[in-house]
Amino acid sequence: MKKIHTFLMAAACLVAVGCKQQNNGKPTDMSYRPLGATGLEVSEISIGCGGFEKLDSAASLELMTMALDSGMNYIDIYDANPKTRSNIGYALQGRRDEMIIQGHIGTVYKDGQHTRTRDVEECRAGFEDLLARLHTDHIEVGMIHITDSHREWEEIQDSPFLEYVFQLKKEGKIKHIGLSSHNAEVALRAAKSGWVEVIMFSLNPAFDQLRGGAIPWEKGAMENLQGGIDPVRVEFYDYCATHHIGVTVMKTFGGGGRLLDEQTSPLGRAYTPEQCIAYCLAKPCISTCILGIDNLDELKRDLHWMHATDQEKDWMDGERKTADVDMKADAGCTYCNHCSPCTQGIPIARVNELLDKAELGGLTDELQAQYNQLDHKASECTHCGACLSRCPFGVDIPARMDAAKALFEK
Image (cartoon, rainbow, N blue to C red):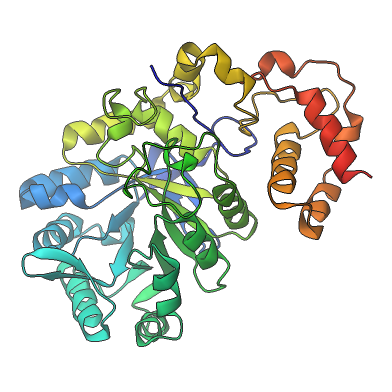
């Protein structure tokens, strides 16, 4: 069994709790979260479009009905395949107002396959086709389809393509602008742009260990996981949380469900759907996990999330059982908050996160300001040791507090 390094950014608790609501006037056990600053409330788990290509219209209606009746109110439609779009449109007839649609701009169907484009006329035709097949005159989130490199990000700036996106928002055909990316560095640039309101990002326990600009399917990327959550990802999650940018998760189960099978999991252990979802939703910036669902059995499996116990959601349970003992000596703090509460009220995970950033990139005025804003500082640590027994990775927390005191409280 290979060493398992599964990591979580700082959060107030293991699983962030959404608020219960009603679905179309009917009680539901689904929990909902704000989609950034859009004013929309979205279900914690939502539905991807991929499965609809494999279904007929009757099966599509059955799947959508169960999803809606269970409280799911968000769907991602990236696929330009006419069958996919038509099946979803058919399944939503009479219930369109119950579903928040995240549709992609820059995706068309050419020569029998789904294709990405930035050509404005192709984008216009593709988007109008989407509206027509969904039997609607607008979608809630217009997602700029896959921007995975700095070059691609720079090319859309001040481009006719971006002007078209802004035009769609002005006309009310999209209510909010989003962007999808698998690259944490590009996603961070989008978050800081000032005009991207929602970001669709690939996130799961394995992907968090990729280098900031790495793409999961790049050669060797998943075979050389670095151990520890990447600092660029930490910065991206923090920025989105503090600036109220909605993040919708793709690849929750690792893409094709790789994390659900020990044989295909790059971390050497199988996770359950509940553990993967819990891992993502523990980050305060996350609004919803978009799940690839091919049939009713998979939907029923994923809907168990609504009734899962805390133990079922504990993504670290298997790690505590299978992690090598020597991992504890070099894993470092993963900001999982299992050490809390501190007897002195110190936000241990946050202090460790700021210390890691300062040690990696140098102490900046911004990091110092963030530390200064903490209600309780590292210097208040009494070395009581209460946190040590709760840390699953054996981090010498009192020593870390001493280091933070020396760096930030000179």
